[in-house]
Amino acid sequence: MALYSHSKLSTFEQCKLKYQMKYINKLKPDFEKTIESHLGTCVHDSLEWLYAEVLRGKVPSLDQLVLKYQEIWGESYNEEFSIAKAGMKEENYFEKGIKFIVDYYIKHQPFNDGTIALEKRIYVELHPDFPHKIMGFIDRLVLNPKTGEYEIHDYKTASTMPDKEKVEADRQLALYSIAIKQTYGADKPVLLTWHYLNHNMQIFSRRTDKQLEELKEDIMNLIRKIESTKEFGANISKLCEWCEYNKSCPVFGKKNIQKI
Image (cartoon, rainbow, N blue to C red):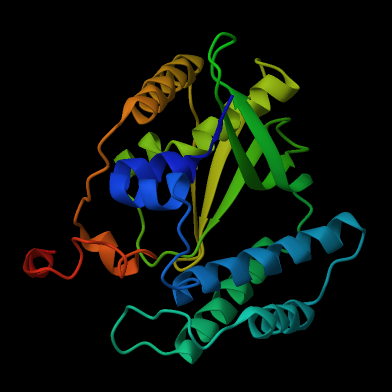
């Protein structure tokens, strides 16, 4: 049995060569991480700390949360982080994170929404006879005290907002909802919630049982494709600029890269 994740599946779909370098050859990345991913990690960790304190019966002040964010940023920041966006500097990203957590705190305090788990590890069984499973982590799991509904919360620090079609096609949280139903009961309603922090907005979605069954079938077919793939070609796209293997890539940097 092999464990797959949403990010592993997405990497294969994005670029088979990157998948080979990362998951098969297990090559060391050309750079540790981007400043964007560092921002995302620091904001996630800060909000995780906030709710961990809430679960202990303490609600930190906004000043305490900001200080925690500053601490997390400083402890893990590296001057070698890649900054691909022209005109942006480290302090620009740091200040964006401050805005994200301040807006979030003001909007959601006093944080009594029924949070029951943070960074919850989940496993998705796709079929009793299928040898592979999906593994993932839920940013925050809520059992809404008013509706009795389970809520899967995910934090996004991207600058763009998805359209309705993309939200309804999102695979990650839908997979996580399967795990929640397999754990707590197939009849349990699950609400998918994305927090787009750059816009201080939430997006909600639900999946029918039929949609979840179709998703499981699609994922099994994708894994079968991955398992049978022999040639791992590169796929040039705008994402190459942020790829942690672009210096090792035999295609990136050639003249056709100008067409990105």
